[in-house]
Amino acid sequence: MSTNKNQRILQLKNVRKIFARGTVDEVTALAGIKLDVLDQDFITLIGSNGAGKSTLLNIIAGVYPPESGGKVIIRDGDVTSLVGYRRATFVGRVWQQPEVGTAGQLTIEENLSLAIKRGQARGLKRALSKHRKKLFCEELALLELGLENRLKTPVSTLSGGQRQALALVMATISKPAILLLDEHVATLDPKTAKTVLELTEKIVQREKMTTIMVTHNMEVALRHGNRLIMMHKGKIIVDLGEADKKALQVSNLVAAFEQAAGEEFNDDSILLSRSEHT
Image 1 (tube, one colour):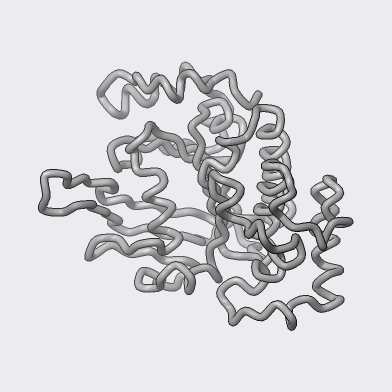
Image 2: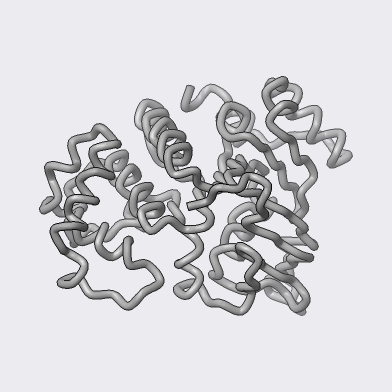
């Protein structure tokens, strides 16, 4: 578990990503990203569609590598060449769709058994020990959803909110260096999204997790975490610390974008989401 708030947990050095290079469809998704993430930073990451948010998370998670010359460093170790399943030891992730991060055909305890051995050789029989079942119950009880009494329940029978809450536990139970939340409440109804966001705060604070949370909601981005980053056209154009973030309202954030980007903010998908999840 992380303990030194001045320690750099994640460094991105000159991270670029180009898709369909050399074709008429060529797109520069990331344009030389440089980013230092400190221990226990909880970053909310916002930007319009195509800004590069999910691409950035995929680079961190090892879904694909950056262009030549880019570096991904986690806890002082260069992991740029590590593919996703090998990087899973360092990176926990919760996706937008609950069914992506959980295996519906398996039970709750089987899902957690796989999660706790992330990045290691897997084997359910060995993983389902009394000690681990006790750990699973303790972790699930903190959610206050009654899942600790349903270890044998197939995950496919859970609601979307319950599955995302389980996915949060799965992503953090092995104590990874960094937690990535990729619009993990976007498909939930407002009431359930609010509950999952509250659980997210609870787990992140309890586990002292270094976290990057992508959101399309400006109010959510301002309300949660200690740092806010806004991306546009593959670049980081706004990076606000806790004190500056707390003093802002949505209108101020729009103004900050327009000043940094040199153009009018006109992404209706973000502006229309201002009343959601409140």
